[in-house]
Length: 437
Ligand code: NMX
Ligand code: MLT
Image (cartoon, rainbow, N blue to C red; front, top):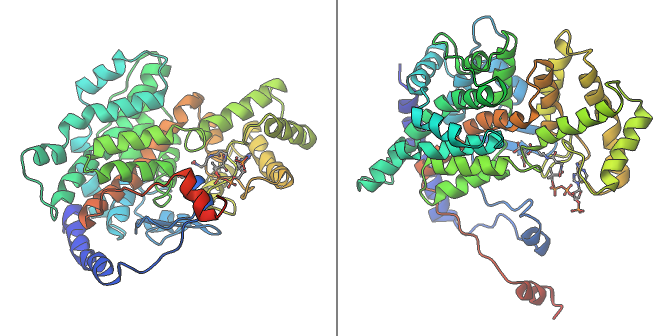
């Protein structure tokens, strides 16, 4: 049986000529033009990133290596006794495009176990931070602290940089990060919210199961963790966390620098932090009603109040999607099939928002997409299982998002993608181009 790294090497060798040929023989082919609105408005729709790891169709939603979410869950080897796959199997699939066998999956499980111990100096860094620091700033600091261990940077400094093989060092760093992010997240969670008491890893568990175990969660939550990490993994390359990671890595910064930067982008309320905002919004609203589920009229008024005060409705809208996010649907289906969750008041409220908010946003007339995104549904599941510290939710997102970002930067190195450096223009130049001067 070939190892994941050997399979990846074969895939990379097969893929390289395609990229080389495109650049050498067809490099001048245009993919589109850039308008003034795009230059000012966040490059929306500008096609200038390449990835084969996932693709986001505006109407269909995400496909991972060509597979929809249900197809992904169906195809991958399942953890014994669970309906959900190994996160490790999904990593294999993101990297290679192949569905691994059980044996190949267990090889990754074992590899991550060997790499998973969180070094004492990382714990020291976390403990030195003010205890009220946001968990995302702790998470980011822990990641960048580990930069001293980067195989890529050590080899680069030793003069061993080789364009053809440097992806292997990126792969090593990415694998170590993947193995440690769950335990680091769990440490932050227990330090901040569980009286600074900690639970050692269980060597018999997979990555998702171990995360549930290390934060002190129930057996049922193990599937929540597996589902959550896979659903949040990747959303093609242009989203802030993936793009930031790619951008930073393009300077030949290592995986630790790059993913720490990606995490800082994920921490913005228009991006990953929206899952925290959704829960804050719904909890505040329910508290005002003494814990009762509101009427549709009451909810409609609250949504308008939010819009009229100049705030966005968190969890709704999207830069690319133009329909309900299938990641939302997948989590909603999980709620509907889970006894207890289906009738849970917070889930009822989230479902009512799903009925009411799109109409309100359409009438408001600004958002191009009035439908819910992944963040509108994720917090209610966490809350139901007792992870009520919504400040922590974006760390969960960040553990999952690493799968996509780190697989992508491994391929960036393999295909020799260039240092990112778009050209800027001045406002006068735009006015000249528009003929208004
Ligand atoms: N509530 C109110 N207004 C909105 C919303 C919303 N949920 N979504 C978009 N708009 C507004 C937006 O602020 C903009 O207003 P203005 O012209 O005054 O600047 C206008 O509608 C047009 O924006 P769009 O082109 O539809 O959206 P854009 O691509 O610029 O931004 C988001 C996409 C996701 C940032 C935006 O929809 C949003 O702020 N949503 C709420 C926050 C959220 O849920 N973020 C999570 C995204 C998923 N993730 O995990 O990263
Ligand atoms: C994501 O998962 O990154 C978000 O849905 C944002 C995006 O794709 O732009």
